[in-house]
Picture 1 (spheres, rainbow, N blue to C red):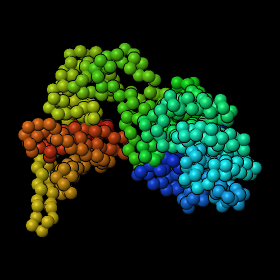
Picture 2 (cartoon, rainbow, N blue to C red):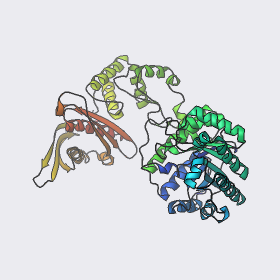
Picture 3 (cartoon, rainbow, N blue to C red):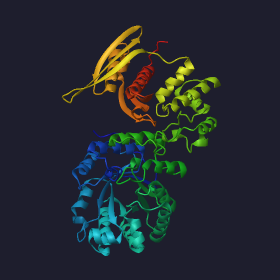
Length: 539
């Protein structure tokens, strides 16, 4: 079914392009294997975000990309972006009008076509196995043919910067030829990702002055400088930037779309997105990560969950006065939020701000805040970590602020049995004895491990009284053996992540026994889940 939204690109002129190549170059990342449905979903997210161009792949090169373009024409009405087909210049010794690969680009129906062309003399002679002059003719013939067919053409000059280093005049000749043949933009590609910002800026400025062509930049991240290189090219006069969502791409990746766009809008003052779309950036980043089935990077600039997280007490004290003292932007501008991390580095300001974040009014009670700070430091000395377990910290804070731990059930005892049988099979069984709403409960369950058995037994015992627990699901379980001198008796820390379908939270347990540490984290997980569900505690 075709989407019915009207196209809206009235906010921008053609003076600056944000070009996304997640569906082609980004898909070359190890571990990413996109279906046609995946590509359509990502294209919708990118169009909603407001990029100007979405490169969909290489039609004719594989059935998946050919199908994508056919379905995109039928299923998506692009509101902000133009769909781009990627291909190569015609073969040596042939005519563009007769080249089946060029014909497939036209048959894709894409209004814009990006052609990859060789700009490095050694690549022309060794990879294409043709002459330097024939390579220029391949560029000229293919671009002019596609333009004559009513297509807008961009040229990606592959290995441009390495080619410029080897033979600057030939590299510039490729740029001139493409521009004179009708290419709207000539994109200088750092294909091997080996350049640094000052080098990029110098070369782009020189090529712009010597050729007069409209230039773009495509930067790989092999030196960790792809975003910086992209912005350096903009400083030198490039008006077209090619990026991928979350920096996905071959080897270590490409220039990351989100910090590039944020820098252009917030630091350069360029309007490259529709009004208000920058606030969707964090959501779009995480949504695309979900589609490609990769965990979002927690420390990604602007959109990572740690991008505006503050841990040190000194920082928290300053942020309490003015958040801008330790933040370069307001996180709400990119759809993110400020977070306070509570740890043994925390001071009073960290606890007060975290309480405010959690909706707990500490009422300026310095004695209470001091108790919480000391409690956190004492427990973290024993191995607890509250920056990774917000739910456990909230339970601790509420216990101090409200005169006792939230109580939905009281544990009488628990045990877990692991049986190793002669036939090589294993059995795990757990029994819990507890009290809830005045009722004594004894529940037993089996599981695929002792912790899973305990989890099931706890559910069996409590779900009749608290049906809200049926929604809870454990989604992650981490164990760390902390430093110590007791060998197998070393302290163990367990972190458990739980979801109710609407949100996710983490809890922590610490003990010399991994099962006991897991039980602590489980207790907190279910207690917090009932609190989120609005269940009134026993006290």
